[in-house]
Image (cartoon, rainbow, N blue to C red; front, side, top):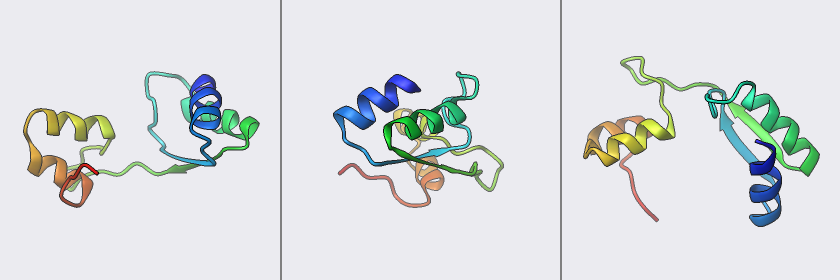
Length: 88
């Protein structure tokens, strides 16, 4: 998280804030806390939003949405997004 926050978000993109889910980067232990700490060191405000689940109880993640789009499940992706998906 430190390199992503300091090198990419803060330096290259000049981001001032970042919003992440409480299940952000599950492969890394304490990723949410470490991201918040790294953000604090770079002057980047990190906000954490609670986990969102579908009516069926499935956790909504960007990976799950991308997976649905890749497999052609546009309806499933749209339900997770709460709107029709689009590319700007």
